[in-house]
Structure formats: structure tokens, C-alpha cells
Amino acid sequence: MPAFDEQTLHNLEKLCRIDCSPEEERKLLDSLNEVLGYMESLSEIDTTNVASCNDVLRGMLKNRMRDDIVANTLSREQFLSNAPDQIGGMVRVPPVLKTS
Amino acid sequence: MKALHTLSATELRDAFVNGSIKATDIANYFLARIATHDPQIKAFLQVLEVRTQTHAERLDKKRASGALLGKLAGIPIAIKDNMHIEGELTTCASKILENYRAPFSATAVHLLESEDALLIGKTNLDEFAMGSSTENSAFFQTHNPWNTRCVPGGSSGGSAAAVAGRLALLATGSDTGGSIRQPAAYCGLVGFKPTYGRVSRYGLVAFGSSLDQIGPFATTVADTALAMEVMGRTCNFDATSLDLPAEHYALATHLKEIKLGIPRKVIEGLNPSTRANFEEAIQVMKSLGATTVDVDFDILKHTVSVYYILATAEASTNLARFDGIRFGHRSKNATTLDELYFQSRKEGFGEEVKRRIMLGTYVLSAGYQDAFYKKAQKVRTLMIEAFETAFGTCDAIVMPVTTNSAFEHGAIQDPLQMYLEDLFTIPANLAGLPAVSVPSGYDERGMPLGVQILGPQMCDTSVLSIAHAYEQATRHAKIPGGFA
Image 1 (spheres, each protein chain N blue to C red):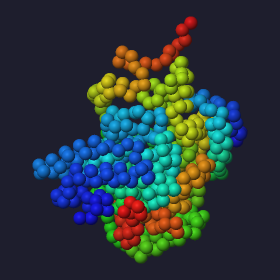
Image 2 (tube, each protein chain N blue to C red):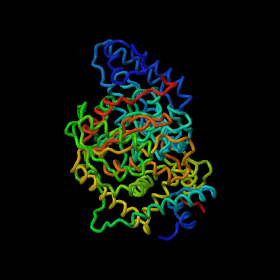
Image 3 (cartoon, chains in turn yellow, red):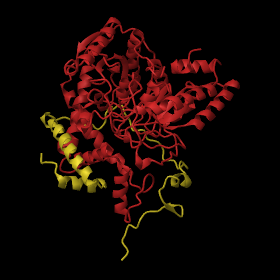
């Protein structure tokens, strides 16, 4: 397994949309290397012909489907009461496209 | 009558129903206990004083009118702060949700309140339930009522401390890798993780969706069963809710014809005092009529690896919703949309949450998915099969809950060491099994220890029944000094 290096960490920060301070980066690099090193022992286990676990209850669990009925479960006011910023009854966000 | 906090939840409910005490007196009594004792242990993030008093007044009127009272009438119950109570804050002990007010109640919470329980407060936790000590809360640390220098365990440490200090007689927790059972053991309580799907996850802020399960903390197994009778209902708003009728938890007082599996190899590495305590618990169960058989669980040595791959992968996906757009913390230091994501998440998440999101993203990334995520999903299958084989030879498996009693604040700094704390509790989550932690005595420091009983999927009643027989024979549960 290639080493978990600074470049990998920077790529992860981008993927996760999380900025880290240099101090946080140093700690993350050390701890993630240690944890991933520990996890490598999984490669010792023979999993040829073993199915992936997609359902922990192995068939007991049925998807609970219900009819798609329109209902007023969350009003606009209720929803917006938790929004960090709003305008005209909608959530306001910074510009998505740059203006020239 | 005995002091209210020394009663079990069942006894307190009976006292209210038969007219020995008013609900308003119960509410005031426990609110006063919180005011006196919570500053020492800091179990609560919010105390719902008005809600509790208003509900208690309604209950007194309901009782006077002769209407039928709920199964939990008058019982003060603490709710872990990652479950919604309509109109109240749900912070998940995270800066990113510091001001988030729940627009609806979690199904489990709604069921408790419908049965007339008094929702007395929201309890502290490791941020987003990620941790084993409640030291990862963004707001403050919670202390163990048995020794305030020690952690209460985690992630449901606030709920455990609240019930251990008898500031509430029941509490809810969520258990993704041991977050109910480990703090229950550290605080001398009964803590139960039901079969996956037994309690609805609707209104529980998701961490690892294939592992998360809500369950109760209580001072007795009978109270645990009472809470489960109420919470363990099928729910249309959780696609993984079990479509089964509610269980009636018939509890035994002997273990005749019960065969218990003991994973001897797994417990070899225990320290002498934990091991002696565990062996003693097995002897008690044998004296109650149980027989034992060794079960082989070599695969269990890989549980921590499998769990921290799958749980973090699921967490990285679940926590993508916290982006500063629709709810939660939004950074003031961003001018573009992309900066807003990066800055809001940087400012809102704590160190452990960031670590787990990154780890989860890494094990799911194209280059490493086969070696980590997909491999772990296959090993999870092998673990489920190992349990199925074991349950072919026994009715339940008995294991310790933890390798030691509660550790001191700051004693474990290394993330991997903290992850290894979950060694004995993770297997039940990976295999979806019901598992209970019951008090099994005290170590040489006077700190509580617990023993864990795991059963096959759906056998929640038999797990609690075995725990009840053991509890009735031993009666280890006590109120910590200073809280008596």
C-alpha cells in the first residue's frame, strides 16, 4: 500500500470540502497513517467467493415502501427557520457563477 | 415513601398512577436534583424545565380526570442530543448544529412522550456520536458520577451520567459501535442495543446508517424492557424499520436449559481484575442453571478494522449534508459558494469528526475502495456467518463489555487506542445483534464493570431475560456516593 502522504491528505481535503490548519494536517497525517496501517491486516483474510454484506439482517429486512402521497410535512416557514440566510422565502447562497 | 430518585422507573410510575405522588412534584424533584448535581457531572446540554413542568401539569389533570395513563407516566427521561424533540435544539454536541432547532420529533422520542414520559433534558455526547469518552463534545466534557476524574464513556456519556446520578430514571442513547453499552458499563447501568431495525432511526441524526440503533439506559433490566416495549415499534419513516409486532418482554429468573457461548480466545488478553470479574459472572450464570460452550471467534480480532472502515465510510456520506447552506453553521469568512463549503465545515466540525470524514472518504475513493471498503464488507459477511455458526451451538454469547473500567480524562490521546476501546462492543453492530450490558460488580478502584450478553437477531427478549436472571441473582447496581 503506498504511503498516506501530504499530497493524499490535500486531495482528501478537497474531496471532503474541509479546510484544515497546518497543525490539524500534521495530526491527521500521523493518525490516519497509524489507523490505515492497522487496517492493512484485513488483507490477510481470504475473502475469495465471499459475498459483500449489503444487508445486515440477511433477508429479514424488507424495504418499507409506502405510497407517495403529497402532504404538508414541513412548511416553508419551518424549513427556513433553520436556514442561515434567506431572501424572498428562499435560501440565499453566495454567487455560484462569477460575474465578469 | 422512599426518596424518588432511589426508585426504579417502574416503581415511580406506579407511585404516580396510584396517587402517592403528583407528576408536578416528580418534575420539581428531578429538576432540583439536576440543579444540585449536574454542575459536578455536566450530563445535560439543555434542561427542558418548562416543557417538563408543563407536561407534568397536564399529567396531573389527566390523572384527576380518570383518563388512562401511559406506560411511562411521570417518568423523567433524558434524551441524547442527536435525537429530535420538536421545537427543541438538536446540537449533536457540534458547533455546526449549535443553533439547530428540530422541526419534528424522532419516532422513538414521540413514542416515549405519547406514553406520558417527561422529557427532562438533552444530554451531552461525543460530537456526532463519534467517540468513546464524551471528550469530543464541542461544548464541554461530562464526568463519571462514580469518580468525576473519569470519563462516563461514550458516545452517549451524558445519558449514562444522568441516569447513574439519578437525575433521570431512564435515558435514550444511540449505539453505532458500543455507544450505549460501554457508557452503561462505565457508569454501572443497564444499557441495551436492540436488533438492528427494532427501534426507528427516524429523527436520529445519522452516523453509520447500517450500524446505528437507538436503545435505552436504565437502572434495572425490567425498566429497560419497559422502555423497549414503548420504543420498539415499526415505523413508516425508516426504510430499515423491522416490520414486526412490538415484543412483550417476559423476563426469567433462572437460566435452566440456557446454553451460553464463551469466546475464550477473545478474553485471553484481559487484565486480571476484569477477567476475574467476568469469570465470576459466568459462575453465577451457571449456578442459575446455564451450561456453557466455547465458541471460536478468531475473526473477531478484525472487528475494529472492519468497523472503522464501514462506519467512517457511511459517516463521510451522511455528514456531506452539513454544508452551511440549508441549516447549521455558515461561515462568515466566505465570498464564493465553494469557500462557503470549505470554511463552514472547517469551523463547524471538530478534529475527530474531520478525521472520520477523511478516513471514510479515503476508503471509498477509487484507488482504495477494493482494499478497504469492499474488503471490509466481505469480512463483515464472514463475521455474520461466524455468529450464525456460533448460535447453532448456543442460545446467547457472553463477553465483557470493555477491557477495563472507566479511564481518567485525557488518559487516551491516540485515536487508534481510543478505537480499540470498542473491541467487544462492535461485533453486535456489525452483525445487527441485540446486546445488553449489565452491571457485574466493581474493580479495585471501586469503579463499575459490566458483562455483555449477545443474542441472535430478533432475540431481544431472550437477551434481556438472561440479563434479568443474572441481575436478580447479583443485584450489583448501586447509586454512586455523593448522589445517594
